[in-house]
Structures are given as structure tokens and as C-alpha cells.
Length: 109
Image (cartoon, rainbow, N blue to C red; front, side, top):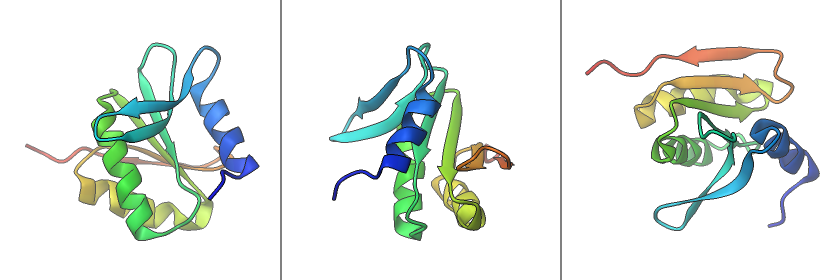
């Protein structure tokens, strides 16, 4: 299925100036956006499906970036927080416009 214009726009905004989109990961996967220095990895998941949210969280984990952001529609923020906890990573869940965000603490070791 082709990418929607809103998804493409969100990826470009997340990458920022000089950042990259569709960054290859191991295992034939791609990360939506990575900033220029590689400090922030962003995944945009607009579907709201718990399976897809979990997969996006795992891609963030694979990225190895110190800051991880999962960007979802406002109504799916709770599910996204659960998906990140289940994947065992910390980071930020924010809505598409960036007006709200929720911090997910990394699990204790």
C-alpha cells in the first residue's frame, strides 16, 4: 500500500534539516526517520493497530538511537505507550501535531 501524504510529511518533519528518512536497519527493515547526528529515531504509525504499534516499537529498539519517538494519532497514544513498554524500551510517544507527549521510562535492569 502506498504511503499517505500525512505520513510522508510527518517523516520529513521528524528527520529535520539534514536528517534521513527510510533508514535501513538489519533484518530488511527501515526506520521512518533519523536526525542528522543519529541522536533521535522516529517511527510514525497512523493505523492504531496494536500489532503495528508493537512492530514500530521494535524498530525503534533496533535503531540504537539514544532518543526514541513513536508518533501516533491522539486517540492511539495509550496503546502506543503499552506497545513501547511491551517492547522493553523507553522514549517518547507524541501525537501527530506534537502538542502532547508522554514519556515512557525504560525498564529497570
